[in-house]
Length: 125
Image: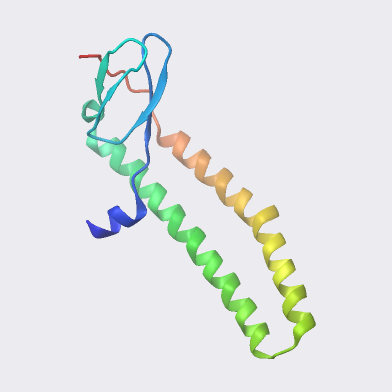
């Protein structure tokens, strides 16, 4: 339970019949600011939401592991106490992370979530 609080849960995007969009957590009620309709996200099947939540947690953990591995590589170079390789290595690591690794992981995560996501029809109360 404590792990869920640290990681957070993926938000649910809601679109009202009037066209207004909003975000809410699972098991939360969302009131449309434009027309006042109320939507309850607990109508979404728990198994579907749990699958998305587990996938999100797995990708977050993988990203954290990659960052930790890159940080260990920089620390290993720093341990040699050579200033120029430290700066060059840090530049290569940061560039690799932001230009190649993070976008690749983000695209895979987005594809996996979209494969699990369904368009649930919630009825207004």
